[in-house]
Image (cartoon, rainbow, N blue to C red; front, side, top):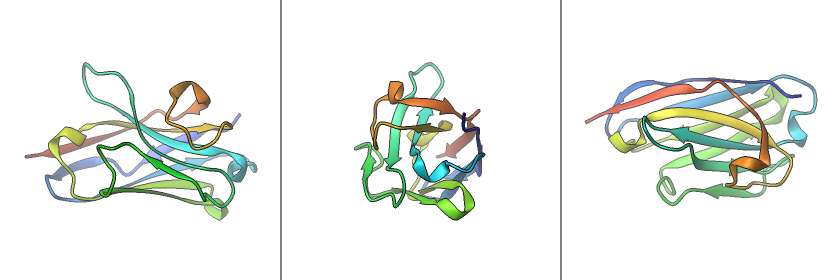
Length: 124
């Protein structure tokens, strides 16, 4: 089972940028489809972005982040990234990365491994 550790969260002003990283253990990282989700206080966990396994040729974004966030992966470093630009206060949440084997999908149940999350706070 792959283990995931997120980093890169923090406090940023509206309009600013952050890059989240998710480091995975194991030698089979490249075979996993990877996703980012987020959960704001009092809300359900929601999909943010996903990237397919191997070359990452398939990308998927939530409408709320399309054009502002970019997901990418570096298989040599066993790491998936989420570049977040033009941040808004409504982006404030705990961000989780997840690994699965069912394609670049927005469905939470398609991901079997989850990290502990990293807090992102965007001030107005």
